[in-house]
Image 1 (cartoon, rainbow over the protein chains, first blue to last red):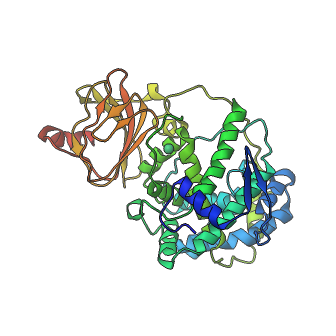
Image 2: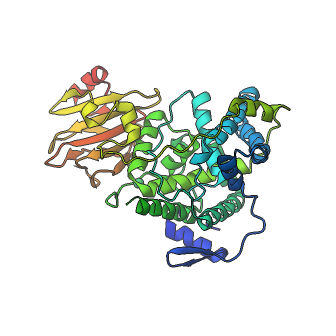
Image 3: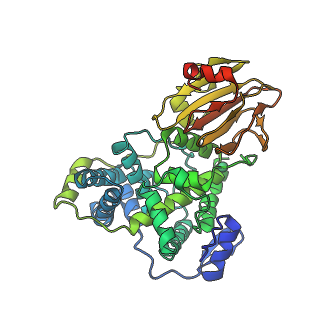
Length: 214
Length: 216
Ligand SMILES: [Zn+2]
């Protein structure tokens, strides 16, 4: 576990390869040697089923898992229960409407849903605009690489474990940052989060997209 | 794109991901990310932290008809198709900035500050301010120190100060301890997007008197 405060890619990569052996890198390709049995269900598949087949059963499964969490997350951020409930419903409706924008090689399902919930909080609770980066153009290959999506999901699993293994005080700070209790001035420059590998993986997906667009 | 040497800090990226940055700072962050895949990927990794916190959050029970109510919100509509991506003509300002300006660099309504320096203040929430600065080649930005944090993102040309050179896409994150004197490089005018969460304090008398007038 990298709790030394190193956030550069090399440091975190080193810390990862010392403790995990799930991914083996061969030039230009990511190979999965072992699937983590404890991995959460692939919510990505549910979102793609909504996109491709308007699958209401998949939506209900997604709703059951995420809607209460979104409500809880918003309430921890100081949102009253009734507002949080309305927001959770609206966030899940957005998940349905925007399902075609989900790209599992760049964000896991929970990450993508988090960004929708966060934007809802800024819109409803803070009543502010949220400037968003310019969208990258979609490549001619609309389908994302399955292996890439799976690899990113496994990185998210590890990140989750890394967060729960952080010392209590540090984990608390990070939670407070995301619940909106800390301003950017109060955040440390060194987060202590091992984000190097996950960043590298997203970067690979971006590079491939850029390459396809040439 | 590979020429960018000065990037966002982890603290800024985490606060942007958490959704707690003042709007003025979010605009600068979103504009830099539009120009920088490295920070786009870093921002994605901070979003992943948010995703994992959401995933492990304890749930709050919803009302019994919450799913039905949500399906009513959707109203039987199919998910929206992805808009076909069209190649955009190259521009000086990335799209998030164009949203605030109302167009690219030729749409800016500059106000003169003296010495050839111009600015346009952009609308944002009141906890911080953001403006475009136009500094003629070779000219200095008035000498100032900071309370709070100041972000300066270069969109055209380049400037130098006591710390380094900043070219297109580079962002300088200055805190209170930095007393600096940016000077635009000779040649093409330097255009920057600058945000601060405190009024700048100028070191000479006259700019201080003008401060309320120009909202510097
Ligand atoms: Zn950057």
